[in-house]
Image 1 (spheres, rainbow, N blue to C red):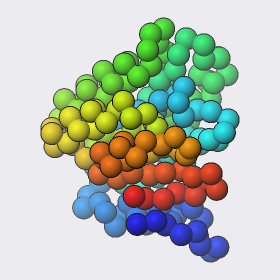
Image 2 (image 1 turned 90 degrees about the horizontal axis):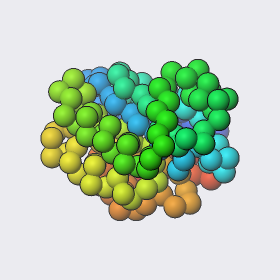
Image 3 (image 1 turned 90 degrees about the vertical axis):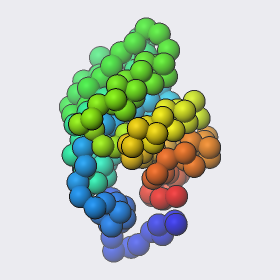
Image 4 (image 1 turned 30 degrees about the vertical axis):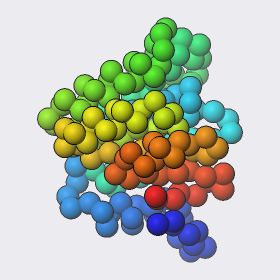
Length: 168
């Protein structure tokens, strides 16, 4: 189901209505952001919007952005100012993020795993989360948002080039 733009309703409010309709009660969310994949100029990703969308669905208990060792101090500070914890790794960011996702999956206090990435490598993580009874949300951007990844989550949110949200 695609969400069509409305002149009178801002994009965040449109999407909040969708998530509000889907939730039975607010849940505890762990959100992990693939920094090198998503924090790119062409996507103009706004962590505040991600937080607002997810907060309407539940309570964010874990909010981390994964970065490589080349991340600048200003980027790290901006991430912290948005209420996310920057996690800097000298190794493969995807591996570190997958390990953290598994910790969330095994955490009985977290109900929902939300990943912000376009990378199909995280499909297995989403499937494992579902096996353990977690709800899954995937948020990504075009171009390059894996169809297989979108189809592996309970809720898939695409931030398209016009900066509008679509739920799939």
